[in-house]
Length: 249
Image 1 (cartoon, one colour):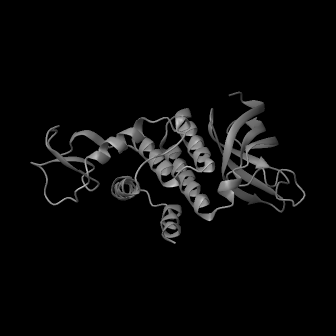
Image 2 (cartoon, rainbow, N blue to C red; image 1 turned 45 degrees about the horizontal axis):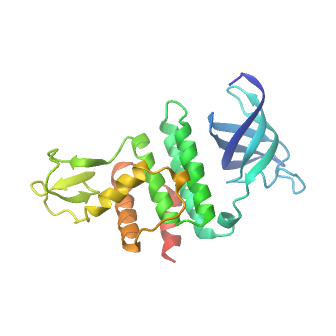
Image 3 (cartoon, helix red, strand yellow; image 1 turned 30 degrees about the horizontal axis):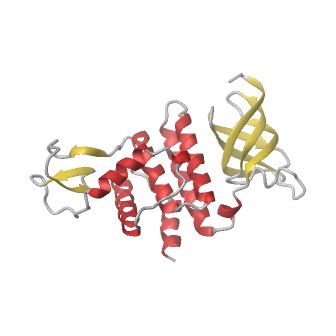
C-alpha cells in the first residue's frame, strides 16, 4: 500500500463514531489491508449522500485518500449489497453484530492481515442475507476462527491420552475428544457431531447453497460451541449475550 494516494478498497463498516457536528470516523474491514480508519467528512448530515453508505454494516467499494499511520479520508463509496433482509430483522442484525465483534477480536490478535478471514466473514453475511440458517452459518465461522484465537479443537484423538480408539464424547470443558479410558463424568455428545464440526472446518462458505442438518444437530453443535468459546477463548462479548437473549424470544 502506498504511503499516500487515492485507493479503492472493498470493505464493510464495523464501527462508526460521530466526529464533531457533522462528520464521523468509521472502522472499515477490508480484504487486502485489514482494518482501516476513515474520516467521513459531513457524513452525519441528513442530506449527505454518504450518510447511509457509511453506517454500520455498509458493504461496498470505498474510494479513499489513504494516509499511512493516520486516518484516511473518504472520497466516495458504491454499495455492493445493501443487506436489506438482514437490516430489516433484529435477530439477523444480532447475528452479524456478534460476528463482527468476534472478527474484530480476531484481528486484534493477528500479526498480519489474513484475507481468508475477510472472505469467510463476508461470505457468512451474504449467506445469512440469502436466507440460510444463521445459527449454522454463525457456527461455521466460529469454528473457522478458533485457530486464529489460538484454541483450535482437537478432533482427531483423545485430548487427555492421545488415543484414537474408543472415543465416547466431545467435551467442551476439556476442549476435545475423550476416550472411554479417560472419561469421567463429561456430558455425552454424539460422536456423529464430530463429523459435522469437521465439515464446518473444511467447507467453503461461499459454495454453500443449502443446509440440510437436523434441528437437534444444529442445537447440539451450537450449545457445544457456546460452551467451548466461554471456556477457552477468554472473550466476553455483549453482542453474544444480546444474541442469546434475542434468540430465545
